[in-house]
Image 1 (cartoon, one colour):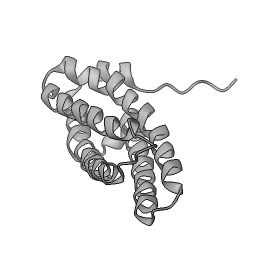
Image 2: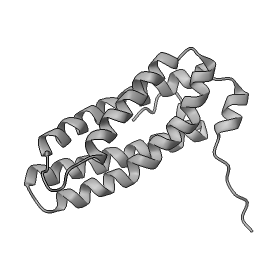
Image 3: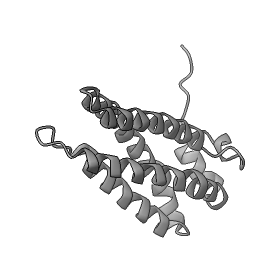
Length: 146
């Protein structure tokens, strides 16, 4: 994950980057389970999906909305959303009765490239292109302790 440009100092980018790390680790566990041919593969797939689905929703319903409105990165956002659809289609539409593990492994390769593109391309560019009011709208709030 990116550590050189400071974009993780933006709370939402920091959150998404931490989620990327967890997703990458879960994808690695799934890859190992598939390659080992063990029964753990389905559980590993479920664990990855449990991380991936809310992460994608956070990106698409927050950061990507602002980037589309800003306009400069709209084409990149459209490409990333298409990649989300592709990866989710393979992993989320997995047929447990007739497993396509090679398809899952290929989707994991695409997921790895996708995360790399967001970490080293989109996130640093977003920090530069979005105005402060946009960040104010999408910055996660911390609930005050009662």
